[in-house]
Length: 113
Length: 111
Image (cartoon, rainbow over all chains, first blue to last red; front, side, top):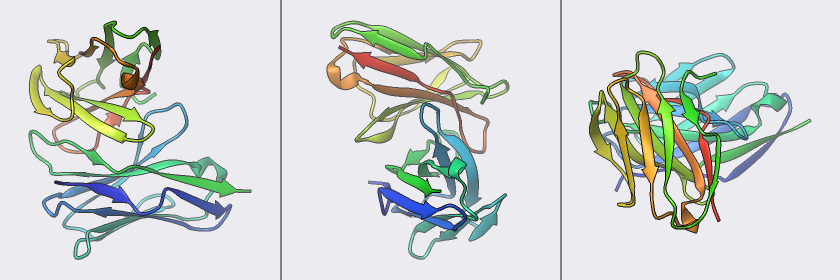
């Protein structure tokens, strides 16, 4: 069956360093991928997305890379700040009328001062 | 404020009881999704509604049901509650294409 998983459960980085969070997916039919951030006590918040016809997309301090050959997705956060501490989820979707997001388990990013 | 409103924020109830969780989607969004989040399972898709009709079902138990009303708000009904049903329940809404916007969730505790 389809699955989206994260390689590591926790990631600790120094404030100011760059963070890289990795994700593997298994459904080659997925055509849309999203990274979400979830802070304690809140719902998942959209960070950045990418469609399967792209391999890179940049936002403000964040970059998502998609490697369809190895079914790998990554989120890069530049100059990581304490406010970036949260749980990060990758999610995949096959767009269409009955589309639904399938989420990975989540990885906790901890930023050391 | 994401624009998706969920009530109540917290709910404590006893085993065997029935509860109703409510969700108002973001203005203009026709699709509503329900997810369950527990510590060891991550975000699990339960069910999707689009403009009042059920569109997709995930790992939703038979004890659980949902509906979407003409004003597009949705309710998730959980009955014969068990301890294992304790979790965060999230509602999300979306337009035809694009990502989901999540509400702040309802934390259900079954004692």
